Image (cartoon, rainbow, N blue to C red; front, side):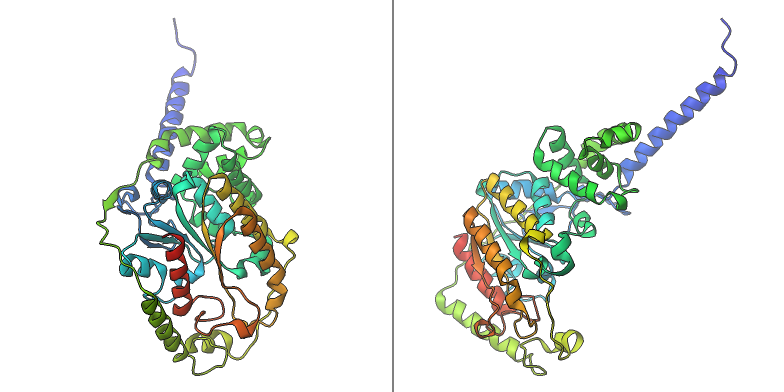
Amino acid sequence: MSPAAHSGAWVHGLSLLIAGSFILVAGQMQWHPAMGDSAEDPAALPLPDPLHGYFDHYGKHPYLAAALEKTLGDGSSIVLMGSSELTTADHPAKPMNFFNKELNQPLFAIGHDGNQCFSMHAQLIAANADLSHSRLAILLSPSWFTGKSGKRGTELSAFLEYQPSPSLYRIRRMAEGGDTNALLIGQYLHAHGQDLSSAQPITQWLMRDASAVGPWLNPLKHRWDAWIIAATEEEMLRTPARKPWTVPEPKELGPEDWARRRALSKAEHLAHCTNNSVFVDDAFYAEHVQGEFRELEVWPVEENGEYLDFIGLLDYLAARNASPYFVLQPLNPFVYTNLSDLDPTMVAIRGALNSHGFDYLDMWSSDPTEFDPGTLTDVMHLGPLGWYQVDSAMVEHFR
């Protein structure tokens, strides 16, 4: 039987299309947010076991969610989630130093500016751990609940720093299994869809899947992305390499040691406050304050996106049988002129923590007479005295 006219060209074209498809998938497997532009396989970068130290975000360790699943599940380390206070000048009092080096107790800290309530919630969803044995602490900054961050909550740019491809693949697996927690991630992505038109297939798949009509608006793209995801899933869900760490014999501090450290840290801070009377480090004052006062933009809790994210985080922790420890940080009452406007928000935060049965260290006060100089090193970030207060409270909570 004679072949149809032009069939050779048709077969050749189909072959090219199939070959191109495999090239595209191969490209997806060779480059993705988990690996960046480096040829080095991030899954081969060992994470310490037990997990300890400090990461500002997931950039160099995109498979961190898998390690957090184990760490949160077995409670082998304290996991401390925070924001910009974790990036201030290094000091022995900072928990990642104090617990690991002074007390020989594994502590892992994660976060920098922008790592707010929904970002932390999403990280916990990606880890997908039973939190009943977890030792989880969360640093809560009142500044999150003010201004643009208070109105909008976690920004997309910050969210994506803590949700690399392997984390999103873990979330998709949960979504495919019917886990409603995964839907929250898709809904967040869907709300920011206008900024994700060129995002990775896994991101766009989750974004569309969160909408009842999303998969049907572009069914071919949805199925194509699903095929790419399936072809790369094994690599994205790899278990990261771990490097055993022999934990030294734990140490404890007596009351005299704590008192001495607090006294020294306060004197150390005051010695660096010579050009101002608002108890701010000289260099920070000269660059950022210069005699100017500040006023917070405060939202009612019912209009506060960050507060709603906070409640969502608490509900998730309760559903996962967690017993987290929260730290309500202060702001400098000598620089901010309207801290009392934020008191109702802080009352609501305390009330939510109490109703969920979660313990917390309350460092907040809008009254300047209750502010202990040295607690903050600037207008909102903990100084050594403040860190020692946090350290001692966490030691008692996790004892």
